[in-house]
Amino acid sequence: MKLSIPNKIPISKEDLACVGLFFFLVKIPIRTVLAHFLHTSALFNTWVSIALMYIPLMIMPFIRGKKRKVFDFCLVWVFMFLSCMITYAFHPDYEYWLFVGEFNIWRCIFYPDQAMYLYLFIRLIDDPEKIFNTLKRAALLLLAYNLYKFVYSVYIQGYWKSTGVYRGEEGQYNLGFGYDVLFLFVVFMVLGKRNSKWYYCLAGISLFFIVVAGSRGPLLGVGLILLLQLLDIIRNRSLFERIVLIGLFIVVMTVLLVNLTTIMMEVAFFLQRIGISSRTIMKVISGEFAKDIGRTRLYQIAIDLIRTGGPFGNGIYGDRVAISSLTTMWIGYCHQIVLEILVDFGYVLGSFFLVIMARRIIKILFAKESEWRSLYIIFLISASQLILSGSYLYSSIFWGCFAVGVCWSERNDITLSKMIRNKPSIFDSSFTSFSHWRTH
Image (cartoon, rainbow, N blue to C red):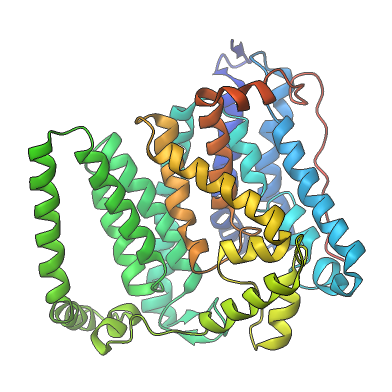
């Protein structure tokens, strides 16, 4: 049901949640525009973007329509909060990392614009088509924003500011930029398959940005989405057609790999003529594409923490405390989601979580094609970053994947549906404000 507001524009609860989701996804461009044109402070810009996200949610209780399910988000929020508090109870020496430092939990986990809240926005929308439309609009704006960042960094500023180990230093690429654009690449690839082939052109632009200005990590996601789309193409074809398509794919990939260095040299010469250099391409040419850049050391520290952390682990930020003291990294997380979960929650609870995640991924990937499955693939492939970099605590894509997986399960997993059916919703009777956390 819908309610016509005074200006006769029909609006539903899902529409309002979509507005909130859109502003959540484009919060960085909004803050950049405010800072550039109004010269306002970073704190002011942050709270303007937060207001844009949550004002639509505050209107939702006054709009007629079916109940929105947020009970599971409340459980997730409480679980993460209790995990942090229990960690502090057992590890008071973590106090600086948990409550004081640059990446304290108030600012980087529980602040209302952080990654975990993407779970809430997606769960408030019960229509996958509306989520697709919101992602499409946000992706188009974000592509324009990243085009601006690319042109400014390459042709005006002349360098990128590093977001990796040596944060703030001048360089040829930006770790965060590559992974940000990976999300756009995956969105446009899925839209190209579902809606219109012209989205593949936008995916090509995104891939260009990844190759010339990103790190090597996003190429894993590129390969995964291409492989998944190939499998989706052949899954409903005859045996003969499958053999032909797979054979053609193997031949093309073999030719590309055999001639990869030559192809990359030609691409490098072309880019050089237009004033662009690519760290990724140069590493392919030099044979250093697979060179280890410190991950082995991080993984070894994480494995040692899992061995000594007991059945319930080292707690939230357990990896940060150890790795930052043993290396020169400015933020010492594992850079590998499996290791990070095992360090944080131990080999008992952590393994339980990982088994559930793996089971969910396998079930959805092998399920029949649906809108929820396509949405899940977008977030799952984009979250492949966590195999090589990043932290699940700071990855909104990870929490989006979690939320879409729950939405899919509601329609396909009877047990889960019974668990969360008919739970009370704070968005239908009264509105409870979110806790607004401030940095200590």
